[in-house]
Length: 487
Image 1 (spheres, rainbow, N blue to C red):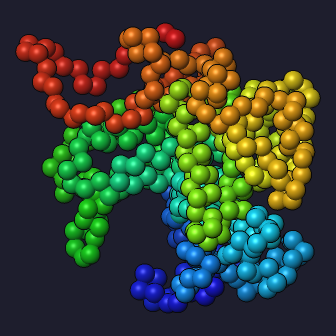
Image 2: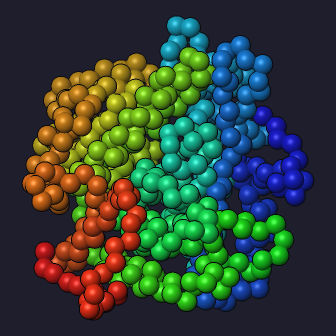
Image 3: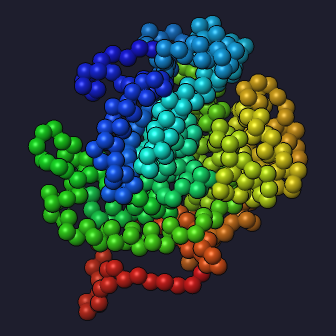
């Protein structure tokens, strides 16, 4: 629960991001210094301030209950006091339940509450704190979180990714190594939609090496644009080639690369996309309850919890892929931010978005506040789908309330076919191959702009071949021609 000085932090330690006092000092030392020197340019020449990979001390479980390895948990000086005040539990008494699955207690409520409490303290001390300073000083906070993508990674380092986005005026993500992190992008895009933020940032192209060509730049940019990215932060441009620079992180997008003058071909393409895809309002009919809080219950040692955690990760990835690749766009709904954004009215309204269908993937537990909203939606004729396991816990305590609600709703197996049968009638965009079969590789974004609609469709899977096909002779080329057609 302690951290040692490290060369990574200039022989200091990582700052205590659970402590508001520590983060107040951080803001005073850094943000206030920027304000002193360039504060008159905030919001203009200096449009935003970027935070990179904030996290708390990562939670590290044991491989087996009898392992001699060291386990870790996030910590701050007054954590025992605030945990007891928030939950009623004495941290010293329940400490083993953070790491071990106690016989006869398959799912630990104290463990669940610990993850929730640490996550909330992190956001209050760091994210909300920085957000409020930026709000007061006309300087939007942007950047991205650490370990955004999987249930396990966000549990380990930040608790819950979507909760952090309340602390950004301009939420963002980070995509490295040509990865296809659909969950990362969709979580952020969902929060951008619900909070009505003006854009979504991506730090992209990191760790793609010197031979990463324009095809890769376009492919990565296209699928991210289809999932909401409107501000591209390139990784990176060098100030100098001297020193232990990240020379393969990737090729420098500057004069050190022979193609830098031609890079406008890439950026002009995305400038055109952003011209239209930042207009109007997003069109999304389907909301999916995020399953992160059920994962907290399973976050014990690998030997006794590993299979369950793998199953939960698989389900999380599959529901994202099944819906997106079938052109059933959706938003994730975070249970922790739902109470502050939910509104009674037409549809299931979360902030700026109103959904016609709510889908619950397999879950162990569900919040009372989520059930309140779902029961109200169901009573007004709203369509609710329970796919797979119905929550048998409420706030991590045994409850049949979700089961009773499910009896009045649609219950189906957690399979691709079953889910498609229920959501397909409401889909807005349908893409088919020339043989009439559904195309399963495209992503899209649809926006309503007054009486018009804008749609951007991108390839969401890399083509299997990279052959360069030469054009026929005597063919005119218009590499940057823009085409329009009516929807």
